[in-house]
Length: 300
Image 1 (cartoon, rainbow, N blue to C red):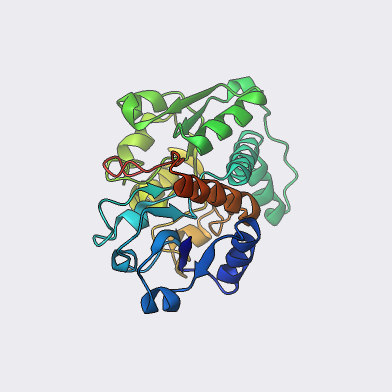
Image 2 (cartoon, rainbow, N blue to C red):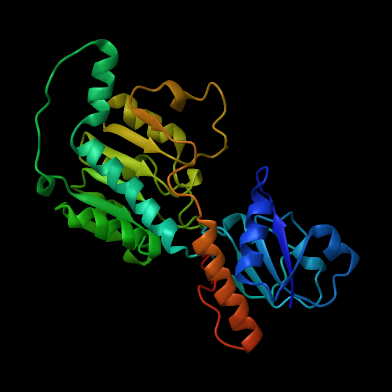
């Protein structure tokens, strides 16, 4: 089997992926972009990390596009993507666990006032804050997929009242009522872009908090800043942004009620993710069902 490994990788990242994939799939001929350009025929699969637009449309025998990333919104934005070729997204158990750990950390920190204590430390203040019980802090997890489900289960295990919301559940504002912490783990689709806006923030009780670990485009930044400045929201933990890296001078950097993470909530684990790729490529070779196929109409 000839497979193209292509995409936008950080320095050394492609080499690390190539080594792990070759270790787990020694029977595969792993090709670079240059090798695929020289001999595109016979390449039956592409393992991709946000590939350059038009790259996959040049492969006449392509039968599977396997994404290395959980989100496929950037991949689906390529209008030249072969319409007949199935796409599989990455569902990495190790990444799901890591994302749940970050979500749980954020909920705990918000519940127990740890961000407020951090601010007090900078001011030299010794001031214990009122302490609520976990069962007094309702949490809403947006997203019922692998990541959302794992995070919701981990948070609920510590005694928080957790409800989840998916795109098919109707009005979001009704589900947000009463929530003290909202954790966003939705896929980015046309239906969810800009979903967290002034209307959503107004539906929350005053002093609630937002944890966005999904995509920056889910949030209307101006509406979030207005909600924070007015006190409608007490704090926001943001791992993802419209432009990444977050530009210098952006209001989020210095806002006292914002915690900025550098898109680091959960990294794909090359070892476990390569095992997912290996299973799908072997299924392709055997004519067996492919796992985690993307519904292009839904966008994930």
